[in-house]
Amino acid sequence: MKPIKSFLNTKNSIIFIIIIAVWGVLLGRIWNTISFSTNDKQETINSLPQQKSNSLLLTRMPTDIQALTGELLISPKNSWSGWSEKIKQASDFLYVWIYDVTLMDAKSLIKNIAKQDTEVKMIIEDDKYGVDKISDPRWWWIQTMNDSKLHTNYMHAKTFVSQWLYIIQTANLTFSSFNTQREYYVLWDNQEIINNLKMLFEKDWKGEQIQPSDIHPNILFCPIDCRYKIEQLMKTAQMSIRTQNQYLDDPSLQQILSSKTGLDIRITLPNDKKNFQSRPIQNKIKLLGSPRIHAKAILIDDTYLVISSINFSTNSMDNNREIWIIITDVESIVKYKKQFLLDREKAK
Image 1 (cartoon, one colour):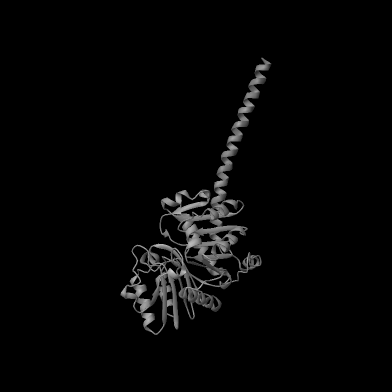
Image 2 (spheres, rainbow, N blue to C red):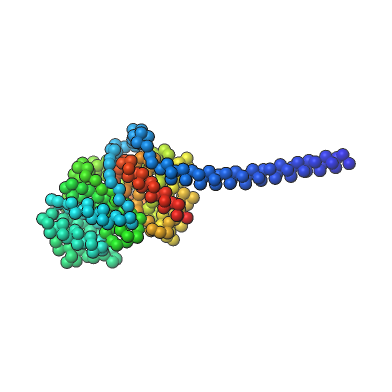
């Protein structure tokens, strides 16, 4: 009987150990879930980057990027009033790269600026569905041209520059951009950026070749230098990457993001069928239904905020005219991060 009792005791011990192990795994998963939720909540509450830590990170810039201030507007939160009040200040000249202009209020506003003896020039994509051709009489007050001199697939940038102001945005001038979609706009009066954008526009207008050395370190100008700069920023990320984009299908960017295993990477895309296949980074992605994400923005290490016209696609970076700006302004970074986290809470 003793061998039998010993066997039963051993068997009971094994069963007890298995039960304890299973409970341990379950409790561990519950704890991880609680911890993850707590961390998300904590980040939302304490989402303000401290000026001190931000300054320390700036000493580790991967290139010669400069500390740059910029005001951030967000759609669809009353962005039209803020945007239109700023663009009305254009004087002397207003140069525009734009893909899509269908909003009548925007057409009227730009036309009125041109009537006030302001030189208005616009490079606009004319090879797309549903967009007015350059010959549209509503543009007769404005000098326009397509992107044939640029030798690009599409003129997809959304950038405005005048004597005292620049605006680089993710939005086209459409009703949906200002009213139903998530969009970002960076605007400021930095004269160095203004002068650089003015020079780049004039070269595009004349069909002159643009060299990487022509481009300000905080400007990314596709297809000339944008891939190198954004990939370098991603590769040198040390803590976190927060990005919203219309889609993400460029293999090189996917590979970089998937390789950053030690970082807190969060990607939010619109709830489109195409975005269900963004491998190998599916575990980092959430999809948002409303507002629809048309934004093209990325925040790296709470230090570099990049706002642009570019979708994370190979064609956008290698074939289109796209324009990005990198800012380090703490107030704008806080504003973006708060909006990102609010959208992230609703995404699935």
